[in-house]
Image (cartoon, rainbow, N blue to C red; front, side, top):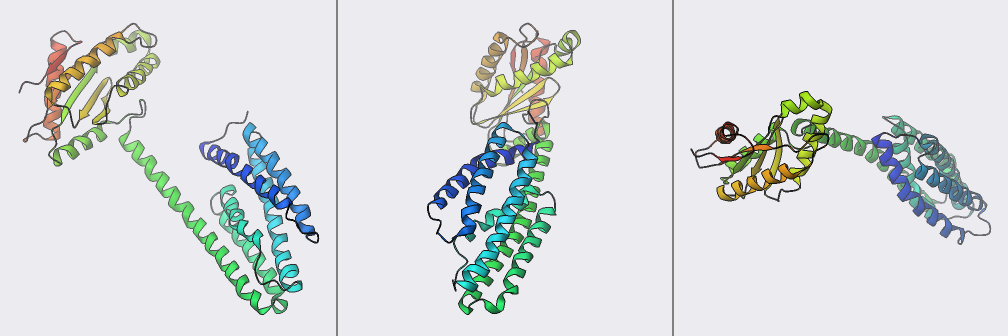
Length: 341
């Protein structure tokens, strides 16, 4: 089975959802083909076959890149043939005044160009195809009925707007994605996926600026260095991940959870008072004691609890919780201590 990168996987899932709709649209179109519409008698069955096989290949993750290119080529050829038919058959010969129902799907053809081709290739390709269709129209300009010319101009201009919009939309999406990635790097711990120290400071400062009462629960896994030494860092990392998931399952909406560094973690709560924070820490202590972590026997953790007052800064509040944690360690570990001031 071919492995796809994240963007290709996203496109594959998109195609899996869209292609059945296009197949249904083509099947409906079969029942409305006019007797003298020779192009659609050929085009629609081809589209049904191509879309059907493409969907099967997408589901099975086979030849993804090849199927994309095949679809792009076929859609492009059909689009150009339809453009030629609209101008020379519908407008010039039959004096029709509109571009017809088939042009409703034209934007999708240009979306496919941008999705399939990377970087600026999609824009260049789309612009070339657009210029080619424009040249078809102007080659027959003198024979096109006057009433049809306005419709054709509007059609060409609307497609040009689609192309420009898709060009800039891709950069907007890319910028947003890059911003989200940078934010993730800046505020997320890469191992556990929870918040890092920078994010924790942000929570504390935000809460203090809004005059919220904040409680902090500092958590330190007992003798974690010994675990790394005895079982290796791979097991140690697994334990940190399991521990993070274990704590996250116990949090409620007012809690924020982050990794302070190493085996130290911190819970920031905006709606727990001193008493409820201590009780919550006691509950977490027992949950950790009872949990069976990968590769090791049961482990324990020490806790330090502190609650903010009007004079506290983020640094001072952290210091208070750290002193309470130190007290738990000094008194034998695997216990909860409250900063007494």
